[in-house]
Amino acid sequence: MKFLLYNSKYWAKENSLSVQPTSYIQNLTFNFRLATHRNIYQYFFWTNDPGTRKQSFNSKRISFAEHCKWFNYQMENKETVMIIMYSGKQNIGQIRFQLKDNIAKINYSLDNKFRGNGLATKLITGGIKHLLTLKPDIQQIEGFVKLNNYPSIKTFRRIGFEECLLLKHNNTIKFKIDQPKNLS
Image 1 (tube, helix red, strand yellow):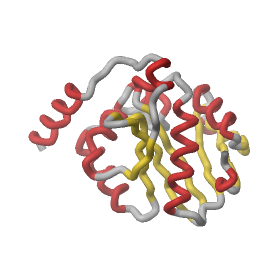
Image 2 (cartoon, one colour; image 1 turned 120 degrees about the vertical axis):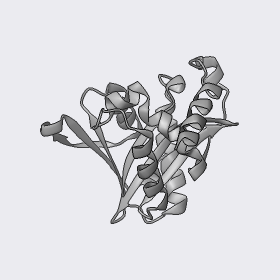
Image 3 (cartoon, helix red, strand yellow; image 1 turned 30 degrees about the vertical axis):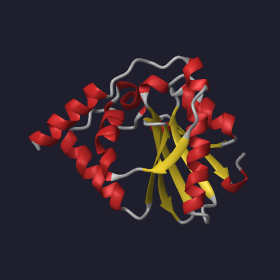
C-alpha cells in the first residue's frame, strides 16, 4: 500500500495546475472515453476535492483504501458506466451512470481548475450521448442535487432536465429527463 500512496502523491504533484482561464477553455476540443483502472488516482483526487466533498451526500474525506475498494467494485460492476471527458492529455471531469431497469442515475464532477466555465453542461450532455452509444435502451436519466448546489441546479435546468421531486429529509432535488436520445 505504501507504493500506491507514494505514487498517488507523486501523481498529484505532477498534475497540479492552476485554474484555467475562460479563453483557454473556449479553444479546447472535448472527447469522451470509458474510465480504466489506470484512472484510480485521478478519481481519488477528484473525489476528495473540497468542492466535491462539500456537494456530496457524504461530505467526509475518503481514505485511499476505501476509494480503491469502491473504484475496483465500480469498474467490475456491469450496472455502472464510468466516463471521462478529456481534451488532449488533460482529464477535465468524470460522469458515472448507475443503471437499473433502463434508468441511469447520474453522478458527475469537474476537475476544480475547470469549474465555473459552463463545462458541466458539456460533460453531462456528452456523457449521456456516449452512454447511449453503449446502452441504447436507456429511457430515462435521473440526477439528485443538493438544494444549495446552485451551479448543478442551473446546469440540469439548462440541459432540459425536469425537476420532479423535492426530498425534504435530505434537502435534495430530483431531476429527470425522459427519452434522452432526443437530447440536443
